[in-house]
Image (cartoon, rainbow, N blue to C red):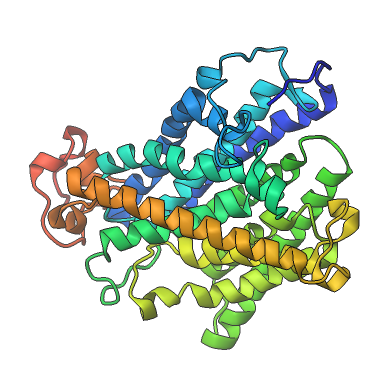
Length: 436
């Protein structure tokens, strides 16, 4: 991308520095959110899958990912060039818009990190950690990077040729992670005991803490995507708060009507669903539109998470039901609620824009979803055929924490989880004498 000769704006730079830190915090927040939702025997493995994604995606992004996503278009809107491999050609004085290019690249990196981490929720409790270490960098380059170029990169076909709108990542983050999670869980197959054993979240306070950190970080995710300290950032900030609230309320309403009990897990999931849906639309819809987007996502996603039991795919932590479905809702509703005062031109169906923008949004959703699913499925099959993608039955029954990481999250973590644990999978520090 051409570098502007002007110096960076200090206000915009300060805001984007803060926003970048907020988005990076979302991945540890996601680790807690996911970690609380699994059983005690695999909570550390779940945390590790998110944390190791930070390291893996960062290395890939700095090596080639940023150049391919945000370098000058090299293939008709499909992928960027290699001008900035290893961040070459850039320096502290390079400027992207009104912020340093290094900061812009780091901000975009945090999006790639959390997208990879999101996928892990679909394969919780049963994926090989070693296979995950191989999957993440390959997937980041072949799936996330091209879609990011399509949507945000210079010359990207969705941005500049199709004209579909996506302010902060409904397509490259939410739909890509959901479609990829679906593909990967189909490759792996269901967990042992799926639809038979109780697989309740082991720590709901941890889930709520993770959801709170995600919500906090989401302000950087969405408002930071304005790339400046301006009115658009403020509008995206308010829309994000509003949609998270109506998503939470919508999910609780469904639970109360359907089950007779509004739950803490439902509150956390509903807030996340609303935040997912407003991600693509926060810079395109009015406050009223944001309230409706969040409510629609909280309501629909609360039903969508049960589809896995009817269709027999084991999406462990509901990446499909929340991120894919929520991302589709938020991306499509831009075509209904987009307002000129936010987009600077494009309008949705309810504001006189007709069906044109809705059609563009639909085409983008279908293409991105199919691409992410197909390529991820191929990567998963290849890894499964060469090194195996799924943990052994013994590891799954005992728990991945002990068998893979030789640790437990809790002192009682070795109790009540099926087969006895041999001393070979217990670390020396954990070989304790049972108390009378």
